[in-house]
Amino acid sequence: MSRSELSDLEKVLKSLEFITSVRSFDDVLSIFGLDNLPTAQKYGIIFGIITFTVTVSAVLALLVMGGSFKRIAEQAKTGGVSMPDAIEERVTRPLLLERLLEAQEFLLKKYPAVQKTEGMTPLMKMLVNIAPDVAKAQEMTANFMVKNESDKKKKDEKLKAFIPEGYEQNYISAYRRCQDKPGGATISGMPEARFEAYARAFAGCGSYTSTSYRRSYARMYEAVACNNHSTEKQYREHWLERPGDIVGRTIRLEPLDSKRHLKDFFAMTCGDIYRANKSYDPQEVWAFYEDGPFDSPEKMKESFVFQREMNEAGFAIIESLTGNMVGAVYLTNDNPKNLSISLELPLVKPSSEGTVESIEACFLLLDRLFALGYRRVQLSVDSMDTKGKKLSGRLGFTQEGLIPKDRIIKESNRDSIIYGMLNSDWDKGARAFLFKKLHGEKAMKVDVKNEKSEAELEKQSTFIEGQKETDEPKE
Ligand SMILES: *[C@@H]1O[C@H](CO)[C@@H](O)[C@H](O)[C@H]1NC(C)=O
Ligand SMILES: *[C@@H]1O[C@H](CO)[C@@H](O)[C@H](O)[C@H]1NC(C)=O
Ligand SMILES: *[C@@H]1O[C@H](CO)[C@@H](O)[C@H](O)[C@H]1NC(C)=O
Ligand SMILES: *[C@@H]1O[C@H](CO)[C@@H](O)[C@H](O)[C@H]1NC(C)=O
Image 1 (cartoon, rainbow, N blue to C red):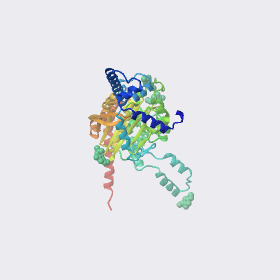
Image 2 (cartoon, protein in one colour):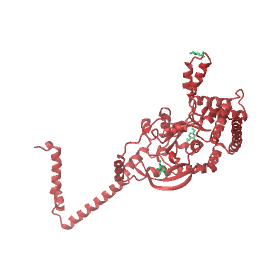
Image 3 (tube, rainbow, N blue to C red):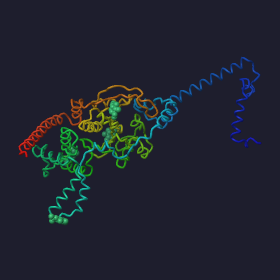
Image 4 (spheres, protein in one colour):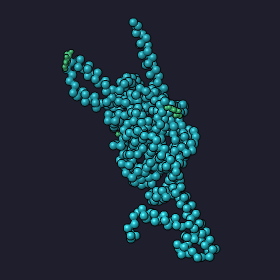
């Protein structure tokens, strides 16, 4: 039988035969034809081999345990572009021991995969503005012939089905309040524009938010929408098309939707030249996230960026002036039982980090959450993320503690710093602090004054309503 005809199994057996036939070091030396050396030299060779083996295995062990092979591969990919220190430190962090990663994989298998969705989660549905379904209502009325009074009544009845609960009442009361005490100067030729803008924003906040919040949101919306003729048109048209969006001064929040946002979001965070900005290392965006950078938009679509658990929410941050996407902001761990929820720092391109736009995105969400009754908003930041820690402070969050070994991110350890914002902090000054930062001191003072007079007006009108009711003769 020739060598090439040996089966694989036979080859294996043959190799084992060789190993088992080696019984002493002399046998090894005899293989190399060195069996009749003086004893001292034999020991020298033994010692040399041992030292060599120990050194090689130690180096290999360190490389593997420290994850350097992986790291070297990752670093080769980034092509040596210089990175900010904190990110450099993060990207070159040691990976977890193989044994722990295996344990993680094994232990995770106990549970079915968590249900995720790319569409609107219940939390997102609750947070967005409400509005009459104008498109459906128009469709209905288009096929509805009105010939007499009773037809008209029927039609109105049917139209009511397209108006969310409480919307009409809120709209009317807000509109009346504006007629009594209009906000800014009237836009020429459009005497009602301010009333309408205010009322649709007020009613849009729904019936479950606090009235002081609704008034503040509506005043801000009215101010930006009714700046001049062109803004009025722009905001009215936007509302007709996308009434759910939460609108601020510099940005608006749109529920994340891969059809609408994937292309831009990928282009902006992949590190290539985007609009006016230079290219950069994508790790600047992704170093502190569980996933990313992504090779393709499809990969991004499958990731946490667009896939939400049921108690999470994701919003795209869109610049008001240009309509360009700036980034995204997320809420996680919604826990209505404890009235608590977590905010994640905005995921934005490097040039938008810590800008007014990112701060306003957080402000809009925080304000709405507290208006809905949440008592605690938590923020968990990677302890190595210096920019993230700075931003948490700038948002008025209080540092509460450090949690070592809190998470495993990209196969390595993450210690987290926990920040918290309580509803009492918000009311006592955190809100005013951010409002001032976003809108300026003057605007804040005007807002406080308006709030006082509107609250007074509302109190009077409810008092009069109450009087009317008690004046009515009882049966
Ligand atoms: C009104 O017109 C509808 C048909 O469009 C008819 O069925 C209905 O009986 C009319 N009602 C009255 C009160 O005339
Ligand atoms: C209207 O207001 C917007 C936003 O402040 C501004 O950018 C725009 O130039 C204004 N347009 C006119 C015609 O004044
Ligand atoms: C990126 O572009 C924006 C305008 O789109 C500009 O304000 C910003 O300074 C640019 N940043 C860099 C780093 O080029
Ligand atoms: C919040 O509520 C859950 C039940 O939903 C409870 O198990 C938990 O202990 C509470 N506290 C925190 C901090 O989550």
